[in-house]
Amino acid sequence: MIKSIYKKIFFVFLIAWAVIWVNFLVRDLTKGKQFKEYKVLLSRDDAGKRSWTYGDRLFEFLRFAEKSLPFNVSYNLAGVDEAAVDYRRAIYYLSPRLKTDNAEYVLVFDKPGYMQDGYVMYRELDPSRFILKKI
Amino acid sequence: MMTGNLYTIIAFVLATSFAGFNIVIAYDRKDILSEPELAGLAYLFGIGAIALELFLFGLFKMKFVTAHILLPWVLLAIINIPRFKARFRKNNAIRPAILKIKLPEMIIAALLIFVVCYAFFIALIRPVESYDAVAIWSLKAKVIYMAGTVPPDFFNIIGAGYQGAHPDYPLLLPLSQVWFYTFIGNFNDHLVKVLFPLNFLAFLIVFYMFLRKAGAERIFAMIFTFLLASVRQFFNYATNGYADMQIAIYASLTFLALYLWIKTKSNVYFWTAFFACLFAMWTKNEGSVVFLSFVAVLFIYMTAQIRSYGKIVSSYGSILFATALLSGLLIAWSLFKGIVNVQNDVVNAQSFATLDITEIFKRALAIFYEYQRQAFGVKYWNLTWVAFIFMIIAGFGRMISEDAKYVVIPVFFILACYTAVYFITPNDIGWQLRTTTSRLLLHVLPLVIFYLALSFAWFIPGRRDTDE
Image (cartoon, rainbow over all chains, first blue to last red; front, side):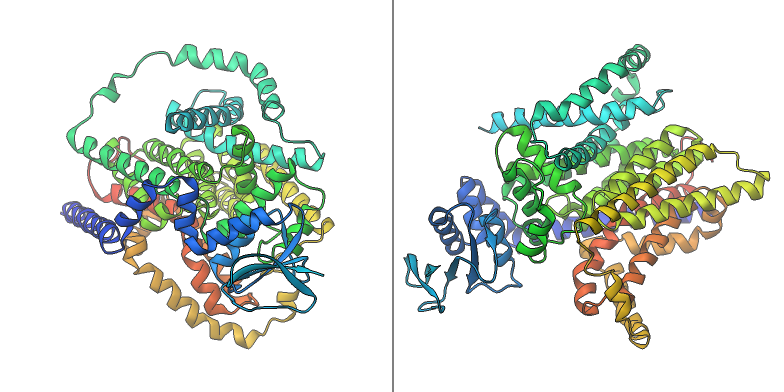
């Protein structure tokens, strides 16, 4: 008798599990826009995928900084929130260049007109995204 | 391009498994492990062992070269040749049971294949990008790979140059990525993400086989393997580049293998637990909690033996040797961290010095609230925790009297240790709970699902191949 009750409980448990699993899977694909995202990502090459993931503007700037900066230099970031994942992605993408406070270069992102004492304009991608160099 | 990548990944899996295979075959002297268990463990232990080997290479300032990395394993393979011969002479017959698959089993198998393929798809569709991956694990991998070895000032660089990258964390995950880059000959942080679903797949195979060895009927083992794979939290961490899936795998392997050792008395499972515990310690700082729990389970088991038989009937020489070796390695790693001057930012001398006892009790409510929020959060955990609580209550007497308690004890021990850290952390408790609880619960998830399988089997007739 008890075993039969547990058997029923087990089947209810499995059905409930399957319903919850399918519900969230389908909901993420449709309402969570994952399906649309996958479609875009599948049509892109590696750089395009990174650009979509990091955000096109940030990735464009990071590529620009990567080409502009020598390999073994230090830099600092301005205009990117330190707690944000963008900040971590920038540091990761530009490594092994070191991010320090008193750096040789300052990468300015989305801060038009930003200037720091002791630095001059080094390279400019556009008026809001540029690199300063220590004098 | 796709085909080329596929061949590269297959070659990588074979090379990595070759290392692990040599470890497993060296201690499985009675051929207790089945082929699927061997394959899964070979990959999981191979990746851990090579990561450890790369660290030793780095200590001696040796550059990472694929041929040099594989050389010790080739030498071990030569020693193992008689073992290979003996094993393959025994196991050359095709097993017809595999061919007799029933419809429900085919459905579950199809679902499992779907989940695994979907994990590969999600992992590979984006480069490394999630928070901890870029802030800690893959960042370290990139720095090491670019230097060609572990740079002499690596820990200082990580500590000073990359705030939040936790220089004190063990290096299994970064060095396994370095091994991948070294093997393929270039830095490719899109393709490297294949490591995560590969770990997922290898573990699911072992999990299924361990359930079978625990006595579960094939369909039952398949169902619970699928339940584990379909837990959204577990699935997400099989794709996102965090180390929590890796430690969940090694921690669970440790205690599931210990359980099988206690149940079957086969020493091969004891050494499987030993290596899994070693690699858990080499994955994250939480590995030291896994080790403490490993010691606690052994202690409880030996105490139970003394009560029943008046003496320890297990091979206590092996137990003492394994415990001493793991303790030695943990101490060596701690001393090494002292020498390179890195310390944990949550549990350190300062966090105890600034400890306010009155504050501790105020945290209890916040901690309890977060745990219940997770337990009833069906989006990420489905019905795992609700069912676990139910089956702990319903099956309590049976659990205590049977070996299944050795699966449950580590769950509570590990969670108790993590909870203790929440009480003393100098960080904001709200932030700490929000950012870590779901990941810490993940570390014991496979044990919880395994216990669910065991406990449901107690109450449902015919769900076990063999009786206890």
